[in-house]
Image (cartoon, rainbow, N blue to C red):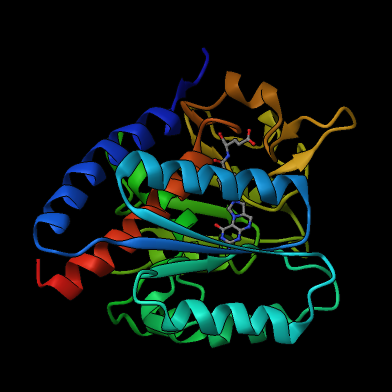
Length: 285
Ligand SMILES: Nc1nc(=O)c2c([nH]1)NC[C@@H]1CN(c3ccc(C(=O)N[C@@H](CCC(=O)O)C(=O)O)cc3)C=[N+]21
C-alpha cells in the first residue's frame, strides 16, 4: 500500500482562484488589499519564499509592497520599515520574513507590527487572542494544515493528533488551533525533549512533523493508515529541500502531505487569505 497524496499545490491553486473572485468583489467596493513584505539579508531560501508571495499577489490581483534591506541593516532600520508599512494605507497586511539575521531582535520587531495588519498572525496580541478564543488573524501554516485536511474530508474532530515540534510559527499555535471547540482534536505536542517519540506517534490518527529534523518520523513509528503531514524544511548535502518524514513512511501512511508540494503552498495561500479576510472585514463584507 502506498499513501494517497494530500496535494497542497492543487488545493492552494484552487484557493487562489477563489481569492481572485473575492478580490474582484473587494475592488468593486473600492478596496484593494495590499500585502507587504520586509526581507532582511540575502538568504537564498528567504528570497525565494518572498518572491513566491509576490507572485501569488500578482496572480490574485492584489498589490504587493516590498521592503528589502541589506544583511547589515540595524534594528532601528528594520523597525523603521515596519513603521512605514504600518502607516501606509496601500499596505493592508504585511509580514517580516523570518528568521532575521543574527543580532536583530525578531520578537521586538514582531511586536511593533500593527496587530490589524499582521498577515502572519504572529503578533503577541494575536497569539494571545488565539489562546483566548477571540477573533484574530491566525498563523498561516496551522491554518493551511486545517484547510488541507478539511478539503480532503479528513476528520479532525475526535482525532488523536501528534504534533512534533513546538516552534512559534507551526507546532505551538497548531496545538492551540486544533484543540478549539470548532476543530475538537486531541493533541499531543512532542518535541526534542520527548522521551519516547515513537510511542506517541504510534497512537496518532494524524501526525504533523514540524521539527526541522530530517527523517525524524520513520515508517515503523506510524499506525498503518495514519495521515502524515510533512512540514519540516531542511537542506540535504546537495542542497535539495528535505522534510522530517522518512520516504519509506509512504508505505505505511494512508495519506501523506509531502514536502515539497504539501503544506508549503497552503501556507502561502493562507497568507493571502489573511490579507483578503482583513480587507473584507474592513469593507463590511
Ligand atoms: N514571517 C514569516 N512567515 C512565514 O510564513 C515564513 C517565514 N517568515 N519564514 C520562513 C517560513 C517558511 N515558509 C514557507 C512557505 C512556503 C513554502 C513553500 O511553498 N514551499 C514549496 C516549495 C518551495 C521551493 O521549492 O523552494 C513546497 O513545499 O512545495 C515553504 C516555506 C514560510 N515561512
